Length: 265
Ligand code: LHQ
Image 1: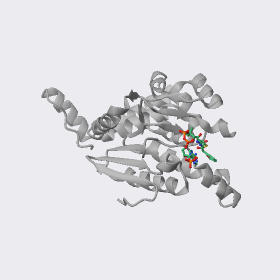
Image 2: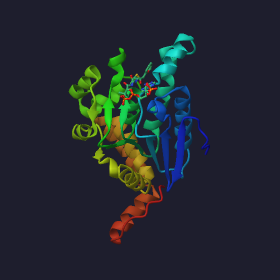
Image 3: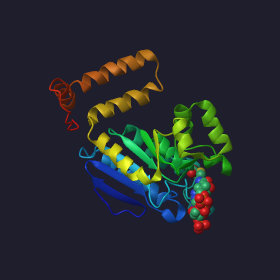
Image 4: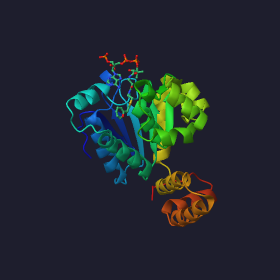
């Protein structure tokens, strides 16, 4: 796996790949290079069976400040490839890659997560925040609509009322409040943020990875299906899960009164 990136740091350990957005001087705002590199890495880890959990985070005390407005404006003024649809295509690829990733993707958010950066966190499977986290659906501050899947994930995470409030007012939601309204799974003190993130990632990386992939497929597809189709899909996925070695290991471990050791297949 390539590790030499301009705008990302990549760390790989214990089946966990940590992707760190790394432009701290602009609070990890996303430019074209960073988005292209994110697409490349997410695409690569999707096919790497030795990777069993992905952590997305930011360098230097922030998660990300959204689209880099300076480089975006410069490119637009130079009328480079800035038709909104072209620009968004890369973000949409990224959202699909996260959704279709056959293993868990955990967003680890400390500091600010604004605009598209916040929405990328919302597209992940789980979110852990530090108590200094600040989520800002910043789009309406600059006369835009939530992009990068925000219009899909946000109302599904917090309900339509809170989603509309966050998008219309673009006020900050802090980590504690984010946990209270279900925007993040856990909010932890900054001092224990890294250790807690690591422990959760390790736990996910040691889980039954194929079952996790099936769970993701079931849950995400269910959002757009009626009951009958969900039950049909459930049957198909359960049949596949029952063929896995980790299913057999889980049952054996239970019967033998020991902890399971999942290999991810
Ligand atoms: C930045 C940025 C930034 C560049 C901080 N860009 N430099 C957009 C456009 C078109 C099509 C498609 O999609 C999108 C998607 C989006 O993401 S729209 C939303 C874009 N993001 C924003 O509107 C947020 C802009 N940033 C802010 O409002 C503040 O910086 C926040 C609230 C995030 C943080 O505030 P502070 O903690 O007070 O930090 P700061 O403002 O002092 O920022 C530190 C530095 O980072 C500063 O640079 P400087 O050279 O002055 O020290 C900022 O200019 C730079 N920076 N965000 N998005």
